[in-house]
Length: 466
Image (cartoon, rainbow, N blue to C red):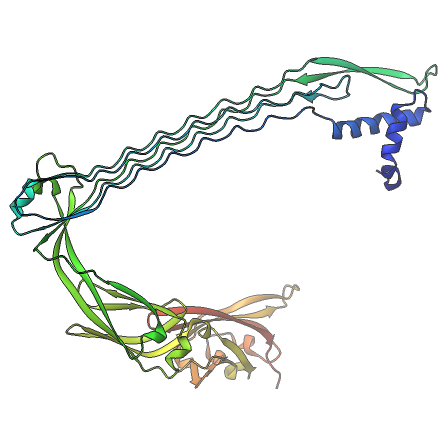
């Protein structure tokens, strides 16, 4: 549509609706504009109903009480059951629409307002878990006097979804609109009639039923031979690496064996999980970090490490992903010592860059420098994809003439500088001549202490002429 005409559309529309006589061409244009504008702004009428309120979820049941007892042969009756959960609430019916007033004799189909969707039912709450029971005993047969009920609570039922609101019905379902073009009384004056319809509004969809809550788990049994309570344990510890230097850290854990047949140990009719724990022994160990890296440990002060005491009375240390460590661990008696020989931040592993591309033919070399100056510690392997420009096709495409690992004997390291003897690779001699344009992709794999990372390096240019 012409920009100037578009800007005058509202004025032209008003004029057409209030005028009964226009020239033929003007009459045609007004009919089209009126249909477009009216159809865009007043296609439907009234207001759709809104969705009904969803039902609230049911409250989950409380877990059963955890208890510790010392048995002496006297009967014991315990109820450690989890609490039943509450049901979810039903959703509320979808709201009725505002049916408004159906417009008369419009030149398009219309739709009556729809009803609102029904509210969804609330989820049923989860049943509470049965409580745990720890029994200290001298005579295992005394457990037969213990009657315990540690069932999980019932899950709540989900609420029901509600009906949707009823949609509006059309007051008038069909009508005809007469449209004339041209000038009355003239040969070009023509009139047509077209039928339009009103469609009833749709009823809102039925709300979704809420899901049922899950039943709580059975409680668990732990048994300990003896009359003294077990001491608390510290099987793991987290600390910044700078806090580990020059100190010793004590870790401890109570080691348990998993068994089956818990109900056979207790009084008949007891309800508890079949798998139970039997105390075996208490483990205690000490950890010490020895720092032999050249950089001070404070350089890595914010890096958090984790100590873990395993079942072999050894302390394992886990370093963060951003810190690469090479070292060794040694355990004597109850002391685990980890010696750090080298430590590198991960960001310093992949800081290689091309320093120089020089020579030609058998003496063609690519020199790469380690900007982080860590090459005396890291193991580095190179893989290269060597491509030359192929002018034979007239498209100046590059074609691969060699791709593979660079043998270690063709890599020379001078402190933090690597010299890759590309000219000694099995590359066609014509691809190494002066003036040849090359595209070289190098992938460097760098490793330390079981970790590795790859870095891609690209260089494009021309082999220098002599």
